Image 1 (tube, rainbow, N blue to C red):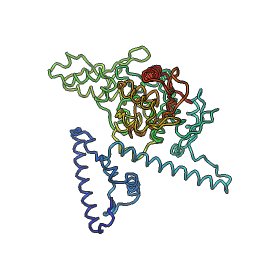
Image 2: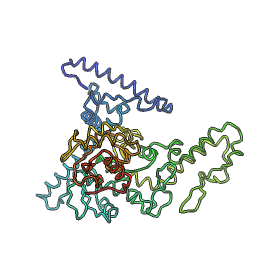
Image 3: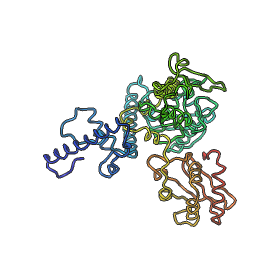
Image 4: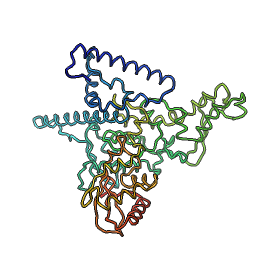
Length: 477
């Protein structure tokens, strides 16, 4: 933030002015939060920051100021005012933090390995977190490796090796690993999560026969995915990310997960007559289905005998929300939280809003299809003006939104995009032989599409739609 060529006295004046302006904005931000967000938090974003300052350098200066006492005329660090950063800027900060921590973990490993040359009692270590796993035993192998790993190991660069395969992990194998293990862990056969059909979201099952260590593993995997900049399919409500940031879920969060229940609770709060008890006939209990049986649980001591009335209905709603998101899943979420924060804990995470953190994990839906086309690379005979490529993009842009999302799922393993936008997807289309009788083939872990040279636009359209409509999994070649 320091301007070259400006006298020191003027620099101090500018620094003081900037501090004052940002402090004023901070006060407004705090007032807005206490007033229940009259303005959305993104109204405080300064989107031009990425062009005005070096965000990575600003973060390093901020970290140094945390370590040492701050002097009056020290450079202004924007990280002291995180509410001005948009989601992309915060992602840059998280990437910077991950790179720094990875480098420190690698340096520590190298120092230990150097010492082991002269001191046999010092054991040499791998500078990477190595996951050597079998495809047919993925969860058990991953649990075993991560259980033996130390906290410092989680900060190392992640390398994945599938037993019996020679592929070098340049990012594609790692992406495939996250796709496979999350699909496995979230499989209904484990019964670890309850699926809500109306919202198509999941939440922790209040009763499970699985080892609590699996919840710790899922937290670790989610943390590792963020840390290694890989989006994963994790269909949780925003409440999960609130809890990861130590914020309390609200009725709005319950409405996202259980729309019918949320609407009914809001009707209870909005009811204007004085006969709440007689009209709604509720007591302080919640009814939940587990393994085909309905169980009635008390929200407070003697809840079955405590009627909901005009004066205590807000308490009832609060208790209901608290039970679903906190009380009933406390031990399971605690294990998930501990695993997640072993990788992603620290000050940089506190800069995020819950929705921003969610977008970091699962991506977002800010589609820009022209940007996708502009950022695509080509291999083999193809180039942007090749007739097949021009035909492909004509067909693609004519597809309805749902088909375009299906294409993303077909090609990348997710119908959402990274928080940094379409440009960060880096799709690749390569030419392949075969002609009109062959379908396009997606190599999901590399965002790579094998596209035959079709003889007409109609055939290309038919084969592309056929491929994405019959997508059942992903090619791992």
